[in-house]
Length: 398
Image 1 (cartoon, helix red, strand yellow):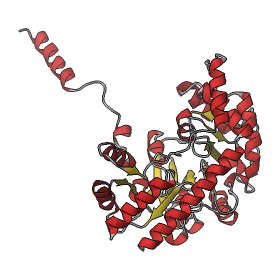
Image 2 (image 1 turned 180 degrees about the vertical axis):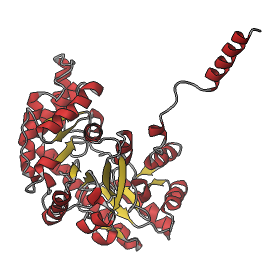
Image 3 (image 1 turned 180 degrees about the horizontal axis):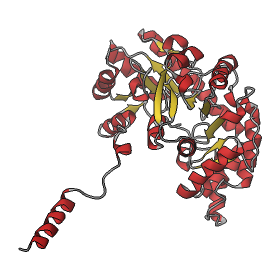
Image 4 (image 1 turned 90 degrees about the horizontal axis):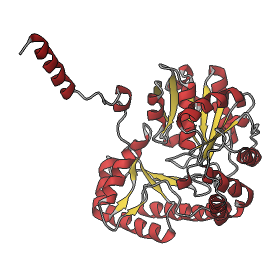
């Protein structure tokens, strides 16, 4: 064999040893979702009651479904404008005035494939490599990976049970968020069910203005507020120009599978987010957009009824944990409760509860710092199943 042939063979061996399709360091640095592990365990078992899923057990309102069906029957299966149909953006602009928000449907609203896509587009549009993004935790599991995928550095800002999981300027300063470029949070909160009132939101707004921090406000659960009115930071003086608001149709309208959300922000921000969106998604699902228009126009009563049902379930679950002697923060929004774990290790408790009683809950540390020692239980399931699940939990902890 000639020397040239030997070199060629060596190069061939190297190519065989290392595939060119190597996951990037940015992706491999992000661990798998702590929620997903429990879903996979539950899927392998029979007779499991899942309190782990953040998905309504209701179907989308019938009028919205009819609008979706009609759009298909009429052959409306093409792309829409990147930003979403103007009809839907106008409906969204009219709808959010109930929260005191005013946005131009032409320049300041972007319709996306779920609120998750909107959040990802915001990270990629606003975060430069090395930028710091403070995350109020416990938090929705996608924030930190989203920051990392965008090249930013996430900064954990744990909220505390003694503060009712409310974000405060003191906690923000304590964890160095005054040096952050952006702050992302979710209220009403997933996973704690905490909400923030106008006074508390205003205190955070003053912190952000004083320290020149932008805000990404996830308000996907705004319609599921059980005590008082939803308070949006974008409506505090001086905050509209430094805030991106996310919302959508998955939670309040039980339209998770239709994948439709939206972002609202100043025109230049939406323009940048749309640049990401148009190269990755082109446009949100067309059928879902027609359903959403009808949902906003005629489904307030269905949303109100779902909220009443969630509130009834919330009160039931809270009372049952109290009867068991398990401390549980009194959630005032979303559809989660966040009790303290009866065992020191919440992960061990959740796994044992699943294996022995067939009830799936999620350890709080799956949602970041501040969640340790807690469990997330969703009450977006029927009252009959909730009664059985709570009976099993009571039997397990006795």
